[in-house]
Amino acid sequence: MDLKRAIMERISRRAFLDEPVEKLKLEQLEAAVWECNRAGDINIKIVTDDPAPFGAKNTYGMISGAKNYLAMIRKAGDPDGDEKLGYYGESLVLLATGLGLGTLWVAGTYNKNECNVKVADDEVLRCVIVFGNVKDRETLKEKALSKTIKRNTKEIKDLLLSDVMVPNWAVDGVRYALRAPSAQNRQPVRFVCSEDAVLAKVDETHENDLIDLGIAKLHFEIGAGGGNWEFGNAGIFTK
Image 1 (spheres, rainbow, N blue to C red):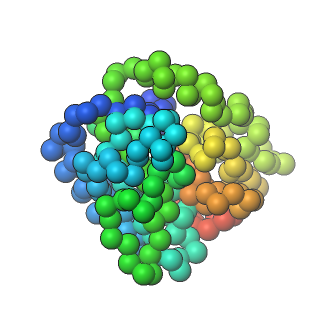
Image 2 (image 1 turned 120 degrees about the vertical axis):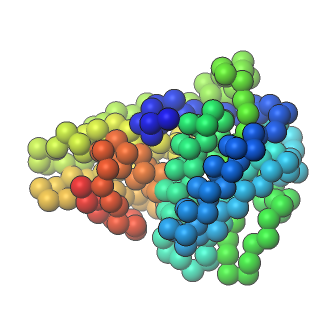
């Protein structure tokens, strides 16, 4: 599936079916995880058939059937680690979407201590991405939850700051960044366009702002038709 199409089709899913993920799909995810870990110097791990972190007491009934997840692990001393997890993790989300799987970024409503992963002393488990088979359409409960935690409706002008004529590719980038998932649907990332650069920044007032920054940067890059981001808050985009 084209990445732009995957962005437009991706939604957060919270009801997963009791069916194993096909071997071929898992193999594609595993290959992509290996490449993300190599490129970002991070340590994402795939875990299957482990429902323990997602019991009703941990998820408050907001997630059901979850048992497969990506454990998002970074080095404790990497200042760009959270952003890398967001950037590369969202690339895995879009791959999973293209494979017909449902996904959900989960930062708070799970039990980190029950995750079946080994985390080294110099590493940090920041969050997980649940994935698995889902119904073609949202369940009634999913629809109700989506309405309950619906994101603030923001527009391009809310995310794009500029005093100059903005190139079309930058507008397209922000249009796709509007589709980026974020903690509590806050959409905290702002894009600043000057005569010679575009940069992305967050206020870092929320513990997951830098993860959200990485996610939004990837969406912008795809929407802009390619380019390269500099990691770091207020990192610059090169088209």
